Length: 307
Ligand SMILES: [Zn+2]
Image (cartoon, rainbow, N blue to C red; front, side, top):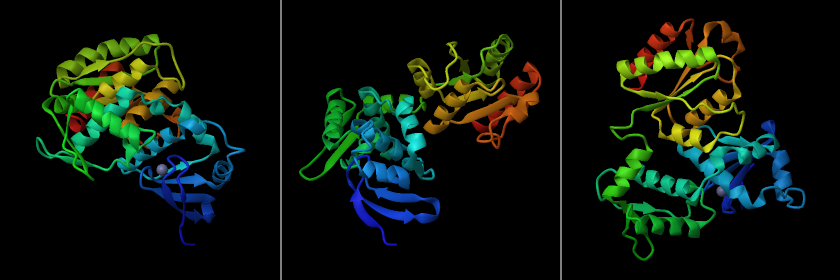
């Protein structure tokens, strides 16, 4: 069947929809959100605003999320009744003004190949920074010029900006590319045994690989990652996730880092291998028995894959 033209559920731009009957999906192509699929059931509901009235004002946040997934070149996301509510409750979507502006800086940074290069901005692609509309995108670009991270070169009919020196430094820092950024985030169960192991491996990781392993001791959480954890993961170059004890928080933190594109080193006590969730058990896990063998394997993995 030929694709039909409709409005995007998340950003209201024109989209092309094609039916995937065998999987009961509608596949959508939006110039702002990118490609995604939506279950037929949810599709019918959203089409009928009388039955779908949850989070209507915040649907645009999903379009930012879809854009991020598309930009990373990952397989398109399927949105259905089960995951749409989860998406809203995830910290991933709670983009503050500062986070949105940071996303713009990193976007321009990624497109820049030499200093002072003017990067053309298509303001109709405002989902790249979780903007609600084109106007918000333009105003954030202006704000970035006001604080001297960007220089505006726009002419009539074309928007273009370049990074200033301060803009470069900020973007480098955000991307963790700065030469002084040597942090790795450790996600693990907070048992006495694991804390003891962390205290043993931290100085060894530093002396062997020059990375500063940090951990945040907070109350265990399942879905609600605190801001401090989010910002420390963002600031890290990679994440070590130990799944011993099968803690929800560890799964979440590893997933968040993975979603950001940070390398994740997956580890688990050998005796708990069978407990690992099938979604992640195919990753190249370091299976350990003692703190010593965990530490030496982690250091080897860092030197082989991160440095
Ligand atoms: Zn869209």
